[in-house]
Image (tube, rainbow, N blue to C red; front, side, top):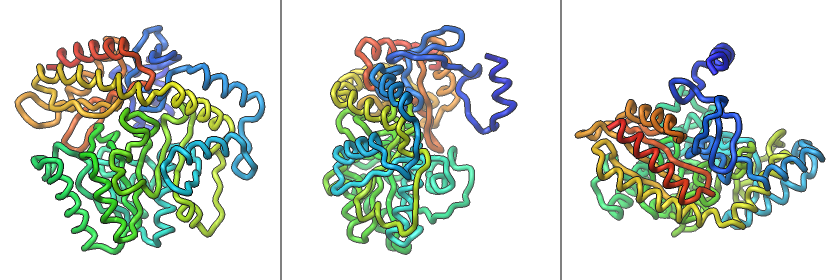
Length: 427
């Protein structure tokens, strides 16, 4: 492992982050577990950053990929592609967007980049509204709208970005308000911004902020925003790269917690749909998707082998009601962790929905972020046989828990026990 780490450092960028003091090489997985190069088994509660959504080495996906690879792997979007059409039909039907069109990319970053291209072209405006504490990818345009300094390496951008309150419920100037008053205050903030700028193209928002530490507003905030946006013709883009496909348990899409004023104009997706295969995409109303007046293709977006993986994975997800499993098992896991939080002074909050759970850590006796503790818990959890993630904004530190949606009750209890020990070791 040390040799591989040395080789990594010699040929890859310094800014390419690695977890753990002694970085881990994962060699194989099965179900909700993975193994490292030394043969150690880990319960995987991060799933390749929420990407292995169904299970590691899921036989249905493995079989579909193998069979497709034996026929043809790739031909580009210049030719008719049956698996791409079939997956687009399924996603359009599930999207909730009327007269939906689907464009496939290779990542969530590229999906958000495409949505921004569509919105700015459709609206003839390069002004974009985004949420504070947000993250939307690592392309030049996506970095430009990201509201999280830790993931924004440059202030240069092709877009003018204005940041709106509301993505973080329990911090910031409106934190002490009740939910109704919080929503009203955020709506007034949105209206005030719109009074000071030229008409924006779109608001882009994660229903639950992923990299920001799994924070979210009260249900209905984006529905209230939607009413204001509609008055000005501004589009709503729901970034569902982390929240889509039933991960939140209560809903298939995260935006459905804010559906009072109708669906978004666009939804971006990626990560879990491919269960590890490189799939991203945009769903949009036809008039928006078709607004471009120049040619555009995607060399690797929608390639046959990834579409085969997506079709098999989505079929398994729906047929086995993994959304319902995320709701049931995730609810048990959240309550178990909240019971631990009640006993430890450094656990400020356990939040989330389904199998998308954040544990915010603070220095005991304060409301200050404790990134050192987050790193220590990450290491201790690994030592105990559990892989988790971390995140947070400029004044927060949080653990991120997002296992495959097929997680069993027994595995949830095993993981919670390991995490409790790791938390107690830090506090």
